[in-house]
Image (cartoon, rainbow, N blue to C red):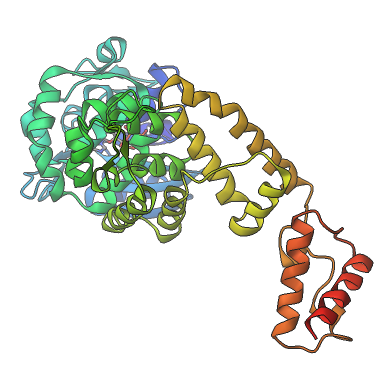
Length: 435
Ligand code: ATP
Ligand code: MG
């Protein structure tokens, strides 16, 4: 694609994340192109491709090329930022250096073209070697222009494990309250990526104040001594460890762990031995999470899933077929597995003795997978009889529903086989006993 623009007399480079990732030896997941061509010229050059004019005002044209979406943006100078999140205007430029100067961090300010080589005026490649996240230009100014960059810095630390350089770090802390100027959707999108990072724990601990800016209840977790023999760290540290212990690719579990104990400071009681208890903390945490996620404009299905996991995260778990079948019937396979995974993450973040429970939880998870794969009957849908089969001797009344439910319960408990003949016989018995 770069050649096509170059053939027409324009400069064109890949920039940003894909250059950073390829220098780091990571696969690039999307390509951004910066060019001296104006948006109308880009559209002309790629006239034969499908084009989406997503950000044309800001100079961005999305081109569908060989099955993937490539964003092509004209070299740009951002005007003044008057609201802490958007430039009031943008100006197109013929100079790549202008375009690289408006970018957030040195590691994201490298351009590459096979024809022209690397352009790295802010020494981004050096910072990649140093594993450093450093603002381009004056950090104070850069964070006051767009406070989302604060979360982007934290997200890059959490995902790629680089350290934030000292001046960048103190400027972002000084500007943390400007995050309130940023749209909730942009905040939540960065937050999700941040907590899914391989290095999320250290970022949550190191920048807890920034988190408290987004979710105020996190403030009470900082330095909070849980007063419990099961815990060897503060509530915030336990939370950060639990987040990182949940699977990286599972945003709902990571969110659930972020909030799972957030209600604890609101429901602490102390017994005669000085041991602290937190009755009902799961329900209270779920309520806080529900409100926080609504505020962050989280989509409903994700919010509901996260809150269910939090509400049930300390549920007693038994390693028995009957228990697993009952749970699958009551909660469904996905939710039940999520609850166990949350308990595994929670137990990995307590004293070492708590981790001794993990093998049992893994066994239950395996049992749930097996039960689900065998299509064992756990719902009325998979019961070998339905209302039609019983209607010759049971009138279509409330009794019908009761009989079917009782049959299902007996099948789940392993008392009878899920087999039509057996179920019909048993249905008659139940019906007769009700007469
Ligand atoms: P990834 O694609 O992994 O999220 P990325 O660095 O490509 O990482 P994008 O959001 O795709 O991030 O942005 C592409 C490039 O645009 C960045 O590398 C950076 O140069 C620039 N950029 C993005 N957001 C901002 C911002 N808020 N302020 C300044 N520059 C930004
Ligand atoms: Mg990108």
